[in-house]
Length: 553
Picture (cartoon, rainbow, N blue to C red):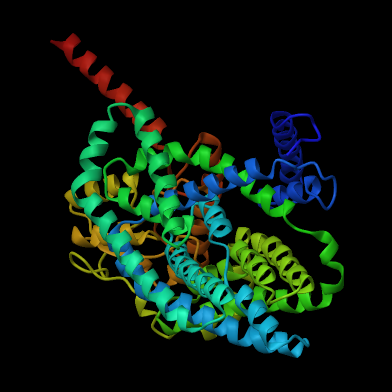
């Protein structure tokens, strides 16, 4: 297709400049970049300026971004995490799909739609956007949090369900015979089983030795990782699944190797750049001409998605023994419909099952819910603080899933409560225990909690920002409460929470810089650790100690 700018390269340059300018304006106005980039797509798309004609190029870059996003998510999950998150992901994912589709169907019928149209609309409301949610959780550094792991788990369950639904609709549309659906389902199960088996064998016998060889060149290692993600994404498409499923499994296959950290770190910038094109492509694909007559039904259905989907997730997680905070934060991730919903609508339109008005309705619901839920997730902790007094109904009296398991010596007599069990926190915990102190470790990463349980530490799932969780800790017996977390906001919330609980002991927190340290000291911290500065001072002291000894000799 000929570009209005004369060539595709110039068109891409203009597109990137527009994204940078509007993105900067969005940041200045404190708006999420996702919303700004979707706005770019609408502006340059056929509904407004009509500048985007290189659809194939933008679509290709968008697909590469999606593949790398799911690949990086897979890198963060080892097989044990998948096993431990499996039951809650399956229960929450299938429960939310069932609830939304049934209630959504009756709402659509109440709005005057026919049965077939109502089914399409109800199913479209069911699926949430794995891509957008994972991007938001990554930006907030909550992918490894308990609610982040649960959310990613049930979003993947949703992705598998939507793939099965589209396979079924495609088969039914081609043949008009429901008998083929059973055959399609069997083929999917067989192909999926073989796909996972082959990946498992490669993990066991090939990938780790291969990466040992490739790691001699960091550039080659990253190139292989990109190729592996895209190749398995393509394999997923050819096997009848999706590129998301294939790319995710590619990441999981490398998650148990010693190179996952360096691969993940080098992928982030490339992933974020390519995802820009996904959001632009999404905005450019919205046909504003079909939206005018559907405003009222779209608002009703959008409110159902924004409120009803989070509520059912909170109910399911509460029944399964999770705290109301975990349920609330995980529930917000399903408060929008997915790009798959638009794909499903387009499929129904091509098969003649729905008309353009229905497609316009699904599109408008997508625009409303994606924009609104982005803000809800970005400000999830503030929303929780405001709504917490009314959320007790979604929590059991004993939320046993998040109750700690006592390790060496139990929790009752701990001397130090340590928040954050990463590299810095792990070093502190090890040194304290070697000196005879009883340590209770707290982290929101289930993998770290499990690792410290295996080392016989007393540990709990938990979040330093949650004042209700702080109240469940044995703070009255602790002489020190330490935080190795470097986010100033988290430490300020911890200090405020401890002050509200009347904690009389001493508190040490961690900061990135002297400026952050000053803020934390003003907020009441007894000691502020600045890891690099403290280590540098200790190193210099040791050098001069050695020099002093030599001079005395």
